[in-house]
Image (cartoon, rainbow, N blue to C red; front, side, top):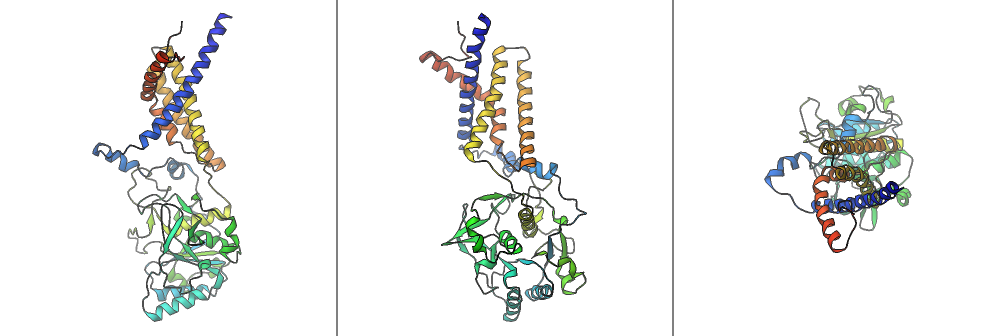
Length: 410
C-alpha cells in the first residue's frame, strides 16, 4: 500500500511536468521563429530547406502516381510551343469542328499586335461562346485579394465569367503547393483558370451560379499525375489534322505552353512542384503551368481534396504529442540509468519517425495534412529546452514551493 501511495503522486506530478514543459517548449519554438537568422553560417542550410515541406517526400517518393502508360481520360493538352497568334487561331478553328466539352486557353495576350492576327484570334475565341476559358493574370497580395487585373487585349470582351487567373501562390522560384479557388476583385469574385474550366466542364452556365458555394481560402493542390500522364499533342498536329480528332470529343482541352519540341531545356512558365524528385535543394523546375492546372482540374473531377485541420487543433495536437514524448523522456531522465543518453536518443528518433509515418498515413488515407514541423522540431530540441525548463522550475520550487519531479521530495 505504501508503494502505491508513493507512485500516484509521482505519476501525477510527472504528467503535470510533461504538460507544462510541452507548453513551454511550444512557446519557445514560436519565439525562435520570430528571430531572424541572417548569419552566413546558416545560409547554405537555409537555402536548401527554406522551400521544403515534409509532404514533398510523400508526393515525390511515396505516393503512387498514375501509371504513365495509362493516359488521363478526361484532359487533353495541346502544346502551343512558339506558335503565333494566327497559328493559335488556326488551332482553335480546327477544334471548333470537334465536339469538345470545354477549351482552357492558358495563354496571356498582354498587348495588341497586328490588327489582322488579333482580329482572327478574337473571332476564333468568340466561336466557342460559353465553352472556353481564357487566361488572365491577376496582381494580388499574399492574401486572396486582387488589386488589379492586367489588361487582356484578346479577347476584347471582358466578361469575367469566361476569364480565369493563372497565378499560383508563392514567388516565382517557390514550389507550387497551393492555389486560391477564388479571389476578391473590387465588389466581385474572380475564379481561377482551373476552377472556371472545371465548372464549364460540369455544365455550369456561369461562374456566378456557383459563386456562393466557393471558398476564398488557400487550397492545397492534390497532385495525382506527372506531365507525361496527360495526352499531349502539338498545335502542328491539330492544324495539319494528323491526329484522330475523336480523341478530343467531350474532353477538356487545355491549350498552353508545354515545352520546346526540339528537346531543349526551357524553363519559361515552368515551376517547382512537390513531384520534383530533388525535394531538397531543388535544381530545376519540373512542371509547366498547363500541367499544374490539369492536376487541379483532375482533382476536381475525382473529388479529391487535401484538408488542413484548423490552427487551434494543430496547436493542441502538437502540445499533446510533445507531452507524450516528454512523459517518457522525463521518466528516463529521472531514473538516471547508465543507458539514459542512448535511450533518449532512441526516443527522439523513434518519435520523429512515428510522427512522420502517421502524417503520411493521414495524408494518403484521409487526405488530411498535418503540420508536423513543430512536433519534430520540439522533439529534436527537447534536451536543450528541458534544461531551461528545469531552471524555471527550480526557481518556482524555491519561491512558491512548486512540486516537480526535478525536486527531491522527502
